[in-house]
Amino acid sequence: MRYRQAPFVDLPPSDWLERSGRPSQLVDPAELNRATWLWDRRPRYVLADGAKILWGRILLFGLVILALAAFDIPGLLIAAGLGFFGATLLTFDLYWRIRWQRDYRACLGRLLR
Image (tube, rainbow, N blue to C red):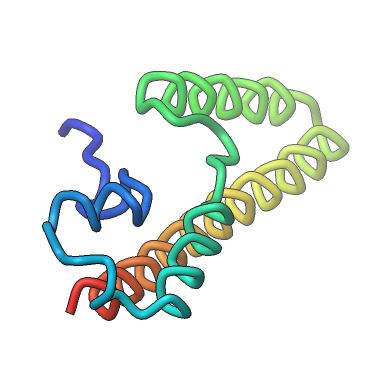
């Protein structure tokens, strides 16, 4: 499966306004400021932007955990801690991106109405 970016989140609000062809006097300035603020605060990817780099880092992380698990109890404890940390990092990264995309799409919808 190929990595696909969500629609409507790859362009700043000014580009969407140009594409829509709406006159500037019909645009709510407060909503435009909000959309610009959201665009400036878009989340950066914690691990990587590309799918190949992401899977490479996940594979490397998994190999480190397997190597640590080869040691007795201390290695297992460290591997469990690293696994928990990695899973938490991925979960928060996904949550932040989905939440930002939802807010940005809603803001663009209000802006282009």
